[in-house]
Image (cartoon, rainbow, N blue to C red; front, side, top):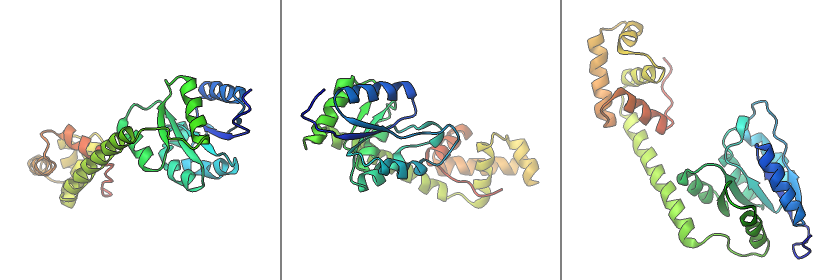
Length: 227
């Protein structure tokens, strides 16, 4: 057991049990004080995990971004950092924009779950020693990718805001899987009227198909008006 690290406390927030167990064993062999945060199978808000994480009083938190029934662990990064702990994201996600978002929220670095255990151990060791765990260039590249993605999201939201209420309702129907004939029947209008509205939607969103319009709405996490 290593004696140079003292008893650094590490919290694990991970819903894949086998991966968490392997990581815990490796950390404990190195002499770390490991606390696993209990995740229940019943769906809950991810923010309900925050008090349990803070109670561990860990100096380093290894955090997954996809926490099963709890949802997106990204929402935990900033509040954990504010509590004084260093966050290392260990994720199966290969989406570099998500990596950049985690860094923008204060994570020290992002490691793929495919990383060798020694890389994760070395990262924790360097954090304990007050050393950098990620180059400025790599951090900047990932954060720029996230900022570019945010700009595209904002552009999509601005285009969606130009829809009239009726056009927004038609788009919402498409998101629910309805076709023009059904939408016309629900709205008590002619199919020709709906098709005219569809043309306006496609023009305003700068897309060429109903499927692409739905894709823009999902990409922007758009909330349609109530029917």
